[in-house]
Length: 83
Picture (cartoon, rainbow, N blue to C red):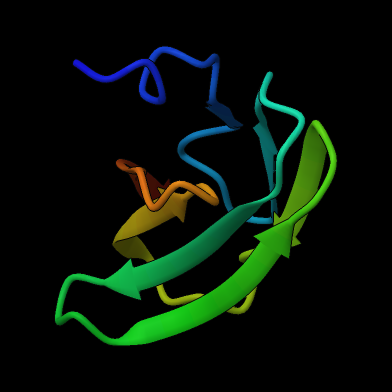
């Protein structure tokens, strides 16, 4: 397990039907890419603060993967459920 995975990334509420919050302890920015289970990119956003939000209310219900990448090219992937 890398230090990046342990750096306190939280994503809530999960499941969500509106706004999702992503918080992380690292002061560096993260690139967040959301994919559906067919591998299509549905959202791409740079996260620049310790607390970030994005709107998933227009997403179809189901599971998504949120891939977070830091400036050192370390990645962590979290599953997001949209209701």
